[in-house]
Amino acid sequence: MTRRASPPPRAASSFPEADALAGDSGQTAPPAAKRQRRSNMTVEQKRRLCEKHRAEPKLTQTELCAWAKLEFNLFKAPSQGGVSLALRKEHLYKDSVGDQLGGGRKKIRTARHSHFDRVLANWALERLSQGAVTSSLIREGGRALALKMGIEDTLRFSNGWIHSFRARHGFIKREVATQSALVMSEASNGLSEDPNQLLPPVSTNLTLEQIRGLLIEYETSDVYAVGEAGLFFRASPATLAKGEPDEEEARLTVLLATNADASDLVEPYIIGDVAPPPGLEQRDFHYVVSSKARLTVFVFHQWLRNFNARMASSHRHVLVLLDTAPSHVVGFLDLSHVRLVVLNQLLAARVQPMYCGILTAFKGKYRVKHLSRAANQLEAGSADIYHVTQLQAMQWVAEAWQQVPSDVIKAAWKPLGISSTVGALDASRLKEELEKLLYRLHVNGLVAPAVLVESLWENDVHKRFDEDLIESPQENDQEFTLPRQEEAVPPLTPEEKRTAYSTVIYDLERSASTHEPNLLAVVLNFLREQQLG
Image (cartoon, rainbow, N blue to C red; front, side):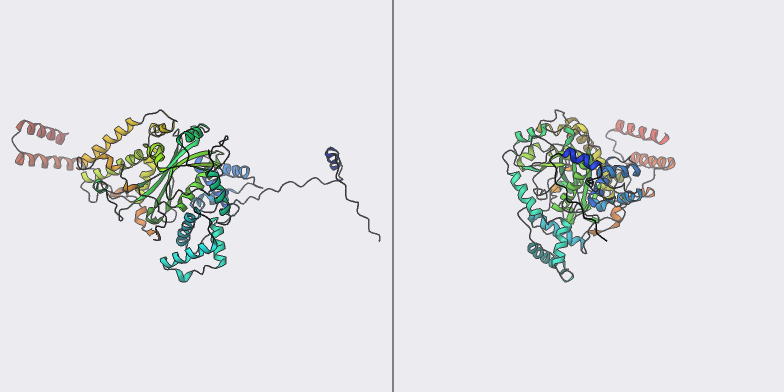
């Protein structure tokens, strides 16, 4: 049988319109459509899904399925069960690493020694800010760290381990990103005509005039400030007044961010040194663990990636102001929807909104909650009146942050030329409220209200370069409990009140001074009225 000859290849035409018509006649197959992604989401997409849910909690899971299909150009919408599982595992996606260089991965890579892995990753990130991090450098640093932690016999630091570590933390191509970021940060003006264009992603060494010019390009709702506050969450006023650091004092570090028009108070990012129990509900805050509750480069990058995912889910391009700090190493980050402006320390002390009243107001609101409970405990005759669990403190942190008045936040942007609001009235009311609580605690005149909100040594929150933080997280489930209702001091019965008044009246009649009989008579009459009433 004679094989039919294949037709000769068709020559390229100079008339694309004719080619299109020929395609319609069946002579030429149309180009294949670009293949869409399948429905199973990547880790980064699940992170953005969780941020979308937090930003718009009223969306149903069915609506989130439809949103994910359109947002991520998926072949089909994820199942409702898949979305439900992603939301239940939100903390895993928020704490995952290596987003922009491992953005296509669909599983969270885990390490055999998770605490060692995080400490070594932070060590590498600190050095990446100074230059390339090679495999030999990571191996050398890992061996030294393993020896300090007493696990040197359990790790081999093979080539496979090095490859997995670099892939897990996104160190594979960051050297190029580092060099390009440094070149962009050294640009003379560092300004872009289009605020949505991420060039450069990080601006440093800008003057106040340049920063004000940059802020004009953004809506006030798209300009954020971020800052950190240390919190000795159960310290007494006397302890805070000492002015000396106490390593044994229970502490938290709280990272806060808000925009210039006070329309978005980002949920507090709380850092502690006690490992949370499984299934800890984090409704109005996010909790992460770090040795000595220090803010590290590793933890700060986690927050930035989560914040970037939140902005991406809302299709917003924003600018974030932050100050120079050991943990604010951001020169090589690649954030799609966040532009960073890093203020030098002198300029930050003058114009950083967080230092212009916002952090002080937040701390004041927290102290009011803590000292109010302590005063009630004192008047009820309880012991250890200042003790609270860490979970109670974290709930107070979330409440105190939401109670910071919008006028205070707007007034803090005045040095940058954004607002003319004055927030001094609330500061005056807060001072008066703290003075009343100090009086109830019998320490008025001994402790000034300013000590409660402006303790410098309390705000030592950043891990310093080459500072060894290798301690494993503590385990204490009691820190994540709340007082049971039955443990609260029950109110006195009418009979108990009458007995108490009778005792006081009896003691006054027998032992009170008679130098001022008229005053004594007034007091006794008042007590008898209360006793009968």
